[in-house]
Length: 537
Image (cartoon, rainbow, N blue to C red; front, side):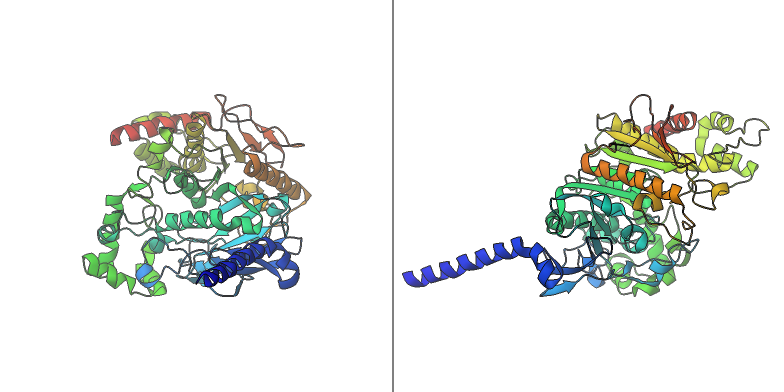
């Protein structure tokens, strides 16, 4: 018996040693067996990038959220045997075709089995652990994906970071709340499944990114539009606390549109279920879970594309225990450095003067007279246009939806003593000079990828490439240290009482501003926001 124990101990010892040797030898496998990395679910083999480094595409970080797992928190991916090939993107998450057809490819290549991520490394093997940038795509939480050339094929990783791009559940699949779902949840919450996906993907990064050359203790979450809104929400979620060290937001604040309470989200869910002729209660959820994903989107019709006010995050008491604006205002968001900003015109909405005046009076309430004066609409005023920001209508909607919520989030985070850096992007895309810098216009410059067609495509020039290189330096410097500044770059001032920000100008040059961003307009917004928050107390 004693000898048998010794033999088993010896076998166990050799097995443990072999496991250690396998993990430490993984980088060497690249030479013999291709680009192989070990994850908690199994081995994956990537492909070499033309400019150096490697990419690992379509890695599942969760089990397919289908059947009984629809509208439930994501579960970690099951283990697989052998080496999984990671040479192609996974399917996009289910989504309708949205206005402008910008998501046509994703809508045509979607599936409910969509919880995949991609890892892009600038070198293989990495000589030292590199900062990690974790991208949350935009699309109103209704469309888009982490796949495609824009986010994955540019030069951003070449600036010394490991890039992770993810898919997460969207629309009715990611943000459907219902009283029956709340009752079946051990946390008495429903909705926010898309946010839970993002959190599980961050946990995957913490557990696995070292195998790809990334530093699991230096993770920056960044996103654009809805991805920026979600980034801010993650800063207020206790479930995401400690999973990332820095955050960056492009054109989206955590509290616009306002995150609705669970009871309102449940009411919207009940109306949706009734419109689909579902029975009440748990039987109705079982009925809805059996509807094929594509058929569900078809039957929803216009409800599938409604934003804001459709399928969006809610204050569920679990993922989001309190409204994000309350958390930020109280100085209780994640105590981390933050970089965020906006484009000068964002989403161009042009209303006739009378309709615009009515919109302002409806939204601003008792502050409407001040608002009308600021936008040149007092008395018989026809609205004050601005060469940079556009017509009074464009200014009003960009300020209310983007500029002012973003500057407010920045000021609240700065008040906690954390480093905060703010920017405005004013450089229009090629051949779009008359339209100004609009929503998503900064993306080619952040990722160093220049589409030749589409809504953010064009004939980019040396000036554009120079601006992109500068912005990539700023973004990756921030990911590295929490400070975007570096050698050879114009000084980017930290946000303080002066509220100075970095202006990426129309001419492609970067320079620090001499005054706050939209001071009068955003001062009025903050007064209105204070009134709204006081009424809710």
